[in-house]
Image (cartoon, rainbow, N blue to C red; front, side, top):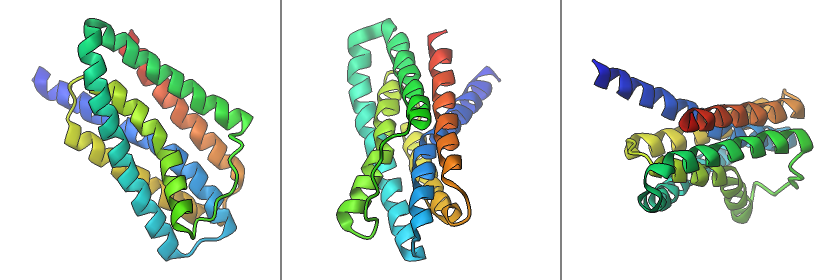
Length: 186
């Protein structure tokens, strides 16, 4: 029974983190949607974001496993601290403004830059998760699915929603990561 509750808790944690990480893609997707985006471009961008949301946490998990082996029982505090810092950064950048300059989402470099910029946070979370034993396949698939889905959803909503919702979405994602970081520490 306790094993089932533990697995359910891990699943919920992974899904909430995946949604929180997808908030960057959602908020920047709104900005692209405001400029106007074709459905085929939105699918291409969303697919690329999904791939980056799988690759970046995989790289982070590998790095996190290495760091976790070095840190031993202190890995819990290091990973929690990393999530707290990432959460604060997301909240701060949503309030201050990221200074994000518009990219041309129709070019290959624009799509790659957008995908990398919204997936960098996934690497940091991957490092934190790599210090623990998590279901790696489920984690990266959830991150990829929600990253892609939320970027496409953001672009779709961008035509009818103002820019301020994107900032609030990023702040909400940061708050979730901050909360999980504090839970890891305490």
